[in-house]
Length: 231
Image (cartoon, rainbow, N blue to C red; front, top):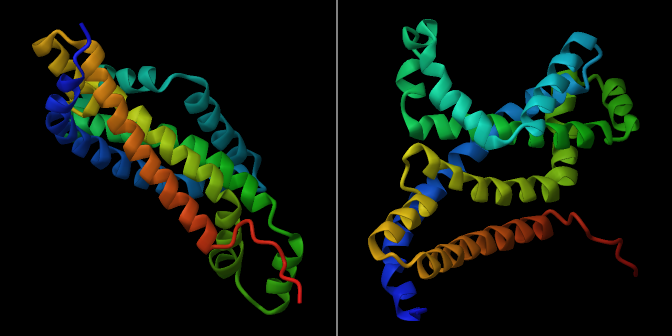
């Protein structure tokens, strides 16, 4: 029989697991953003080798499930003696960092493709004006093209943040007690999966609602969708 009081009784424990979900989300987003720019620049590069490498990266990580990528890293890396003897092994044997790296690489593929399209959409006249003013290519990119591209890409990047938060639920498959992992543990203790996972769903909904509200506020502050004012 459905017991609504059980939802509230397990909520403190679920919120404890939500802390790890938030930490994972933040680290995955940071890694994804850090890798997105070089991927975007490679996709828009003049050299076909760079474009091919970037397109192959995006194709692999967008075309295969994130769960498969996580399993390949967590279960597969330890099969190679070269990896076990390298400086990367302390990270790759830790499920926490495996989740961060796997989901970060996955997030970078989506963010990199979005940012590449936004950079390509920057009017060529801006680059020409910067060249006339004597600005270097690096300064033009950092001070003109990238800020404009980020404004254009922010709504899509915001959606990626929400998807990343939900994707962290895969951490429970490699023993981490994030929100989903905590819910699975509570289910085995209470034998009430319906109530427990409704509670977990409410926590996810609250987190993502706050993230969406914050991203919308950021878009408004940047006047992404503003219209010209009339006198």
